Image 1 (tube, helix red, strand yellow):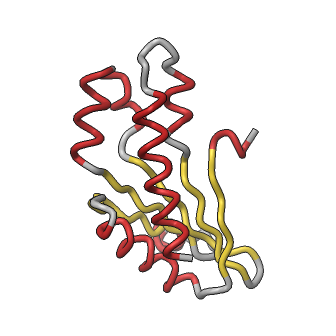
Image 2 (cartoon, rainbow, N blue to C red; image 1 turned 90 degrees about the vertical axis):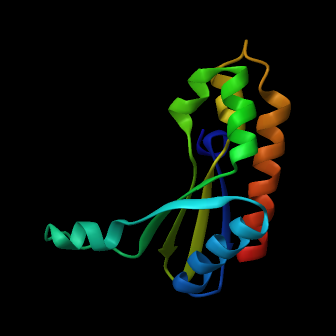
Length: 129
């Protein structure tokens, strides 16, 4: 089930390098980084310990405009999100699949646009890892 929801890649690069790579590559693919949530830091402030975890929210205004013109409910799933975390000596990047939005709104006709967005974000991941 998780494969339908998310696309995952592994890297031997350090966590910080991969996270920075996602930010850099997003910009190079015309996506703006809207927010970076450092979950490890946020939880540490409350006394909880966990390994490195960042949520990186990105948006391409053109894609967002097209999607919300097709069906305003797409906004419930915006912006697009990557997570970066570690598992052992690997850095893992996961993308919440934009195509799942098309699946959740089957009558909206979002398949082509969602696939285009997802393919672009997969390129961001591939270049970062």
